[in-house]
Length: 199
Image (cartoon, rainbow, N blue to C red):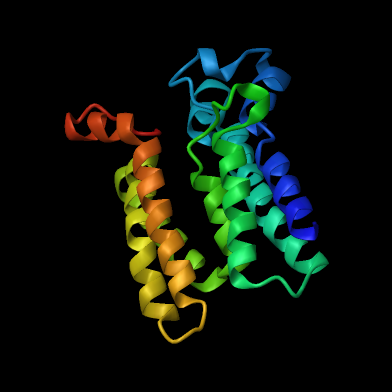
């Protein structure tokens, strides 16, 4: 029952649509009807403003972090599989929010928050790579895709001797596939050199 409560709390926390709330609060508009139509920080950056895009990025990451950190703090005995399940549920809440017809964001920022809470070393290193790729190309989707695909390799390198290695490696591979799926339209634009730079 405790685990079920943690999963439900993680889902509802993850489903808070900060991008949508920022659009309504700042400009009185639905970001789903402007720009790319996505609820994520990139679209908020373009449609609402730079500082609001950054704020949504941080808030989306924070809700993933908070979902895992709060569960671990409340129930220290949770094993790695339970912690991962809670983290994945928060990500699913972001991507498939019940409030919005199960149509949410792409899950990158929330995934970052989840793994910074669970395995800060590999997550922090991968985020560093994300920053480097973004600075070089200024394309968020490209940085996100590369980071997601490299993340399993980082886990393999840093966690191979830990008991929970296989759990995290398996989830990171699934997550990479999931991020690729949510970015399939971006991939098509990247292939055709049509993906816009953020600035």
